[in-house]
Image (cartoon, rainbow, N blue to C red; front, side, top):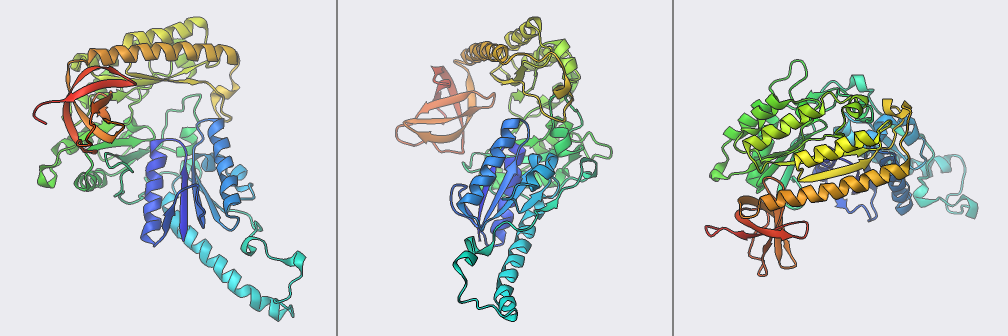
Length: 477
């Protein structure tokens, strides 16, 4: 059995795809590239934007065209919130919602077995009916293995309110393709309901993974050779906040600080993001003091305007956000902070946009990811008036991206001459590249390919270079 995967969207989706992939491998499946012919295609979808939905549909059609006999499995957030739309596509055989991804391998095996049984029974049925199976008329010739779309897709989707338990998908042992950093899912669901976002509807209520499973998976991955573990979730800051939760995020980080690995192997921890809708200055101050935690946080501002933040249903003000930034920079003046900002939200005025520009200047973000607002059906934002013209959105996005590049360069310049620890990801074209703990991309001359990928090195940054900084190995390396 040949199985191919296509994954859209967030790191959680990619983590879950790895879990599904490992389940198939354990059953003897051969994993194929998404562009190769396969017997099964699993499409793990995203629904953050209309574009993501469209990309999912395009790949579904492409996969079925590549092999009309293939079983097409559609899972993920688009499958969860648009069940009828996905199931109505003639190419789709299985629609599996969030909360059932661990069942995909078993369901596919059942589907394949049923199909084989049907094929085996077909000649007998034809003979019993008095048909000559050896002399089928041309117009009766089976198409693509006699498995055209003839039945409705099987659907296994639990409504949002029924997603009450954290889905155990087992322990991921592959981590990632480059053997440098590994992602570990620690949490699922969101209860913030920002007015532009469908994800709380797609992912359900907050569910946290048991700490023992997380600790054991970290241990396995570090012993395998990973030097950095990224804790990720749909809203990572919500870990341990649901009623009856075992421990908080800070307590989990303490356990990881205390984790001893055989052979005294060390590693570092990175958080995928923290939401200022969940944490405040005091929460963040408690979190960042953990010794293995990288001095970098992704804090999604989304806007610098209090008016827009209220419309977005973001439960903080610009001043509260700046307080978090000041606390982080007080803890470490070179603390890396990255962010997301949406431009063109309904009702955003020029003054509101100036507030977004101002928060980028004040925070001196290491990276600013800029998105133009697009309405999502089913969200509160889709019904809001005072839409911002597309031309205005583009102009604002261009201006914000330009400012973001300036602040990113200033942040790198502030690190010149400073010693940092870098996790090397690859070496090519004469340079070994990787990221510092505070998330600056570093280039180290390595014409002889002597620097090992996946290892941590102490370096000193020496100057701006390409999209990051040049660095030299410290003498003790």
